[in-house]
Amino acid sequence: MHRIRWFDSQIRDGKYPSSTQLAQQFEISKRQAQRDIEYLTYSLSAPLLYVAKYRGYCYENKTYALPLLYMTDEEKKVLKYLAYRYRQYNYDNAASVNRVAHLLERFSEEETDEPGQRLPIFETNPQLIHCFERLSYAIGQHLVVRVTYRDESGLQQLSIRPLKLMSQYNSDYVIAYCEEADKQRLLRLDGISSLDVTSARFEPMDAELLEWGAGGSSAAGSPQRKPYTAQVKLAQPLASPDSWHGYRIRSSTPEQALYTVEFHEIESFLHHLMVSAWETLLAPRWLREQLDALCRRTLERLEEGGTAKP
Image 1: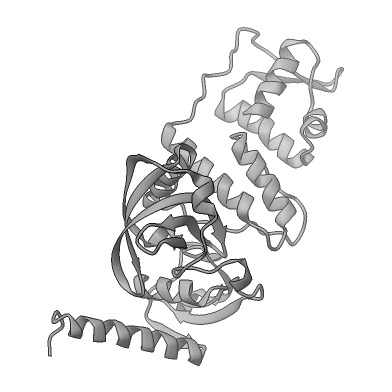
Image 2: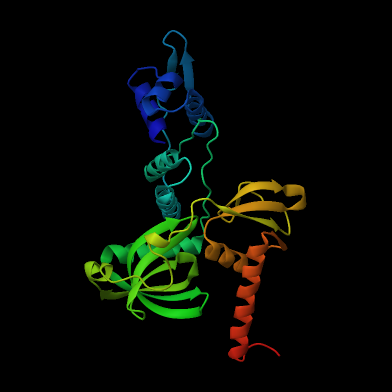
């Protein structure tokens, strides 16, 4: 819309703008510029008239005005979350991805025409966006947050002092000081089932100086960059051929619902397998064994608590 408003102002100033000028002004392809003009014509009902003498456009009806366009609060929240995810991305085609983050922040769209580039796909889960929004507020206001958090040890009630949001290998985290452990922890946002921002304030500098504890890894313990792969058979083919709930698909046989999925963090992917719908984990064998061990530990804990049937 920023580009369309510029094009509209050029017409009203009698400058007869063209797709070439639009492309040069915003450093986009001429094809994208032409699509903007087509959007202005067909979607916004602009009475555009191409004047060959000036090699540009004017309005056939000078009383035409651009319709009032706005975004809902929910759409802005989604764009803010996606801009954050793209800013955090630091792997293949990072420069182009960061450029997309900048464009999202300006509430406009862009397309890359460079061959071989594919933008990562991020899931915009409403509960995750709500959690991201509330934690962003708590970080900005230095407020203590009460969360219900689930990890391999089970469900926990925690009081945390959130310090920073981060994204790593298709997963969102919050770096926070945990009052119960008296240490910093790295908590996955999708492990937070409920969240309550309190009115209690804290000093962020005091929390940042505390050492790291369980529940995550520091920079020294970051996972390897080369991705692992898993071969998974699903109940039915995916609507998107590129991603399985945010995990990139390297290859697929859609007619058989067979997919080779890339992942970087073993624990994160095991958690994903525990909560996602799939039929068969075909490979690798070591991942099957780890998932089997994780399920057995979970059943043992249930039996120890007396909640499992004999």
